[in-house]
Length: 125
Ligand code: THU
Image (tube, rainbow, N blue to C red; front, top):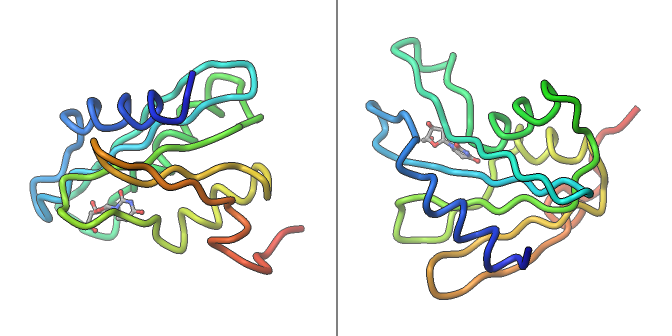
């Protein structure tokens, strides 16, 4: 599984985003260390604060099924500019490892960051 392929899976799964309020359709595909993939999308709610982001949705799905070792997460959206994970999602990814790769981009290009670059000196217990 290349990071290009992981980002393509994320792009494909944007169709499952539930975003009737913002119309920002976000998708995240999480690659576990043993090669499993868990997809997540943002799921919005009439009570806006109850919304869950795509990244956390993917991680919650994986952890719920017994996976906690992650290699990478690819994130995409329907916005013209490349989406970058929000602060809460950065913290949520960091929980599972400071060297997780975060792939951002679109159909034409991808950029890879380490989560600890995106949340330097993040909080961990
Ligand atoms: N959103 C995500 O899913 N991930 C992020 O990292 C940033 C924001 C969602 C939340 C909301 O449904 C929509 O994008 C607009 O904020």
